Length: 310
Image 1 (cartoon, rainbow, N blue to C red):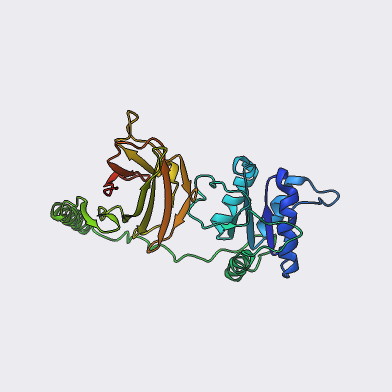
Image 2 (cartoon, helix red, strand yellow):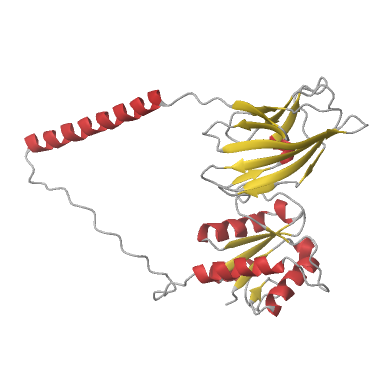
């Protein structure tokens, strides 16, 4: 059984070979479906190796993001807590896999060591250490931990006692509902407030969004474009994936309403709770722009006024 299962698209075989060789050079055993034993079907063999692997490295590329096989293997690994994603192209992983931070190996080659390979090794080793194999029962079935026995209702309860229990539970439910309603009515209306600063404009976001944004720099070019540098601070409970082409837009620029950035760096970023991320956004034909809008999935769009430009 190999320690690491590598999932990839067939079109990326040459580049994935360099990844496999690098893992093997560092002492990790790797399976990547190059050979199928005689008498075994492809799906049977792949399924067995995937189920037995304690770590699954998924190589996201322009080819693999559209592969159903790669998505299925990645989903299996994610559910088991065995997923370690890497980017071999500057792409956005499919929906459902963007909250897991991916290692960037876009310049990995078979003839050159990759300068960022060490973090991937640490991630692989951490997953391997966390995946402790459970002893298998006869027949290859892994025994599950027995759950405590459910309490058996006492059939000797008299009708009056059963009615009393039902009334008690009803009263408890009504009390909980009243408490929730009281807390909801006392919740203050949290609207964003704007505060001008010397190096940009900072607006405190609504508390429920968990996001604060600061425009740290802004300048116009002779061709009429506007470049903004912004810092996004994430204080929410879950990791947040930001794709600037969809998340940011410029309001009041021309007749197009909300104009997305023509260029952005990086292309996307996954921000962990309590962390921040910096973005550089360039907007074409930005004359008359008045505000930067941030739209995140499941949240109301928020606007930040642009700083005064010379």
